[in-house]
Length: 165
Image 1 (cartoon, rainbow, N blue to C red):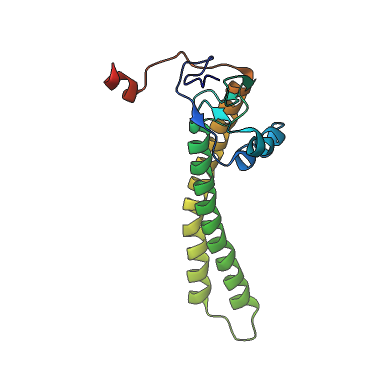
Image 2: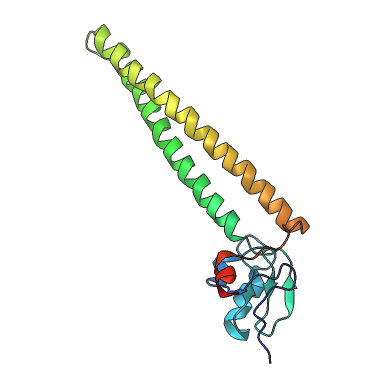
């Protein structure tokens, strides 16, 4: 029972698949992740997303999201959270303006202008971070399509392998 160390598709080092059920969630291979608790660890290629059994048999090509996809997905989520934060400031400023105008007290123009100004100022970062999140989502979609279609970049030696040679 020989354990393979390199991917047959792109010649990258294989890694043990940690948290297989979570990593394979929303794919058609989630059951294989669950079964791996009983049959042995799965190995994945972080570069092309190929999944192997512990014995080295290729289970699926492009089944697991790559490291680049995970990194971009984390960035996309962070930009969306920041965008949502500025969106909340905009909504709060609008509600404050409505309260000041339609409230029981007489409205003061300076308070209305100030709350409206805060909302307008928050609109700039909202649009900026929304654009960043949109671009990251587009890049993530392109990487996923390339992984699923098998369009793997030409193999190159990572920095840690160059040092060994």
